[in-house]
Length: 130
Image (cartoon, rainbow, N blue to C red):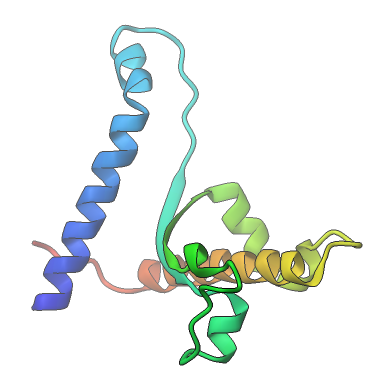
């Protein structure tokens, strides 16, 4: 299936990039040096600035948010995913932030929560063998 092939290709590319960025740890472990291990998950998002979310037909270039319209990789530790399952997006925002920063942090936390939910759903599905 087309979607599955592309999903797997993107996943493989992300794992390769992350592995390349952390190769020192692999070498250190192989050489017998002490290393710390931690579990992470990653998700690919396409986050739109609030203006584009509410008015997708309008260009936001003049507003300065055009550069924020792009794919993003969220690399999240298992500990943060556990917290995300319990805490609502509005609860992670520091008081006194501007409206745009508040929206940014709430949207990012909502994406992290969605990643945790997708992982939970995947854990409940039977494993496909290739």
